[in-house]
Length: 412
Ligand SMILES: Cc1cc2nc3c(=O)[nH]c(=O)nc-3n(C[C@H](O)[C@H](O)[C@H](O)COP(=O)(O)OP(=O)(O)OC[C@H]3O[C@@H](n4cnc5c(N)ncnc54)[C@H](O)[C@@H]3O)c2cc1C
Image 1 (tube, helix red, strand yellow):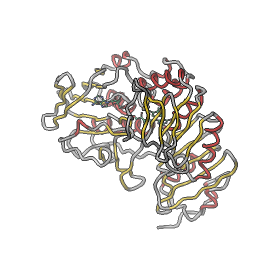
Image 2 (cartoon, rainbow, N blue to C red):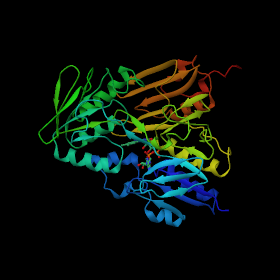
Image 3 (cartoon, rainbow, N blue to C red):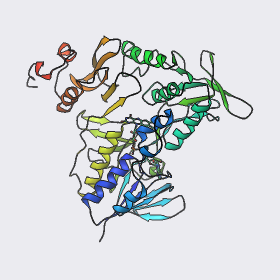
Image 4 (cartoon, rainbow, N blue to C red):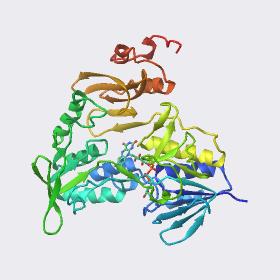
């Protein structure tokens, strides 16, 4: 009998799974269901579109013929609302019931709304889809002032869009630095200066107490917990993701701030796999459960899940993820899990060059490089090899880091 594979979500995780499934199972029935109105596009590049730097076309990755050519059935504008693992069926918003033999949940997340008054006002944008990017671009092209909230990797994209569109923006942060869990104030200062250079003013010890609106319900200002008021024509909020896991309610699939999967992307329920941003996966490098929110990781998880759906436990996810920022005239890269660990080492080399490594049990578990990305592959390799290097911090921070300068690993 022909095996049927169903994938929910046509982001990079779902789409790469479909591609691998077709390679591994030439005769299988493969269906990809997405509630978006367009097939896979490059989510990473929608910021460049919102900046006004890229037209729409290059952002699209697959058109519908890509699925036809691979004999993959693509269902656009279709929201899956229920799942019955015993019957091996799912139900769409139009009450259509679809059978599966093996299912991949690759539904990603939806941006979290600020829990404050008027956070759903007109002109307050969250940033995840192409549609969001179109709306942000429109606001940025017509407005003069903006407020940005969320001192992380997505917030800085909103700040860069403001800068590129000549908006005068205030970037409200709760702490004293951008991405304070991954960088020290010293390192973050490089980013703060770069923001100022493009007309975005970081405001520390701030945040949003509530938004003000006009009579039409359009945002006019953000008021922070200190009572300071920041006028704006629009606001961009990026404070995190809520994973799209409603369909898993009552299915017995275990979750813990993400769908729990092993290193094979298999959940605890037979024939249900998960991949991409929404997983909390067993990280064989860390030796504990971990989470990634990056394009490369989601792609690899989709591929690994597909291999295991066809041939159980045949492939393992073992991956050091990376995430780069290209908005400024110096490069920025974070890798692994820079916000965890029990030790760290950092060094600022100049006004635009900085490095920080997060360590756990003496092993590198993540890091941030600003200005010079040359050592990234060596650091990532040491992380993947789980090499104990925490006692050689000076060598690790050498400007021209050479792993051959590290003392040989002692037997543990
Ligand atoms: C603006 C922006 C910039 C980014 N920049 C970078 C970067 O520079 N580098 C990097 O590594 N990462 C970046 N990322 C993160 C990266 O894009 C994500 O990690 C990656 O896209 C996650 O892929 P995914 O397939 O897991 O989920 P998603 O891409 O979120 O795909 C999930 C899909 O499932 C659909 N869906 C959800 N629920 C249902 C349902 N019930 N029924 C049907 N369909 C459903 C959703 O609509 C969506 O299309 C960025 C993200 C954004 C938004």
